[in-house]
Length: 468
Image (cartoon, rainbow, N blue to C red; front, side):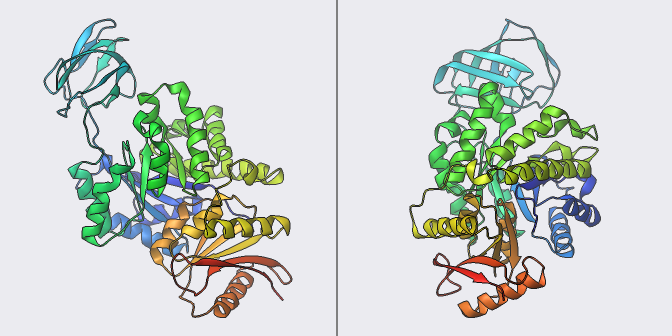
């Protein structure tokens, strides 16, 4: 059975919000729909869009997750007119300054290498000094023009801005009402940035897994505790490249992915992967290499942003990403396999040890299919992190887990009813695998489950079964 193991995340946009177009995107290879709340407005009928996604997924009999990406406290210029900037000239930056911004910041510690970048790095400035608690003096490193409402990135400077805004919490509440599958938090700096969201979840009696977007130097410094605390990671290379030296991003990408693999947390590599396909039906060779590199590094998923949100060729972008993925994965599988490319997870608890044993059995006996019975999805993610050659079929009775697992590498989620016993579970698995032509007579498969059945966190059984 051949499947695409590395998942594809596509950002929804005006050109493909109809059910028929969403179905075409699913057929093309999309596994996760990203909703970018930075561009949300009341005209965007979110409840209807989510309903369309659910219907399209059901029509195609596919597990499709919905990821809500929160905007975070984005700093933008507040100038009404164009500002001409001259190299070497000094300017003030603040709520009321030569270069006004939309947020009242509190400037604290200034490092020697503190910088300001505006409009995706088109204009760069060196921080000279703090004038007041809310205003700094900066020196232009190049000439250019600042247009209205352009993004501002400040690095090497403590600005006292919380990662979660009041607007973000309103969107979290909306996500809970609409039963969204994943939520991504922007500009995460530490593990405590999820606390206000967790507090709201407790009040709402709801729990949605949280993804930390890595796009600040502080996040890189605290990466180990962030990976430990969050449910997944998104490497937002665009803002990360503005906040840090651009040449450091490739090595950081590899480092973060390895750490996520080791901790059994899904990781998404994002930003400008096939950027030229916003306007062109074909990518550049460098973009193809970039996508391939993210797959070789061990990403669970790779993401399309503007390519599908505002691009002229959204379907072609997904098809191209899928085609690259198929070719790279074929080459990897024909050689040493994915397990040689990633860092093996720590086997420091019974679940991880069982998953490792199941992985090793499948490798030693050349078993092509592994069946995971999972209530929470954690066993599926753990087994996925060992990157087996076998197809991982994750069976769960829970609808939300069924959808969430579509983000994880190599997993084919299957929704099942609750089982009363391991015998009933095993009989169903055999029949399902045979009826769907996944295995044939005399083939073996590995199954992991928890006994007693139906209880979260009890994975304690491995079984090798031959179909007779």
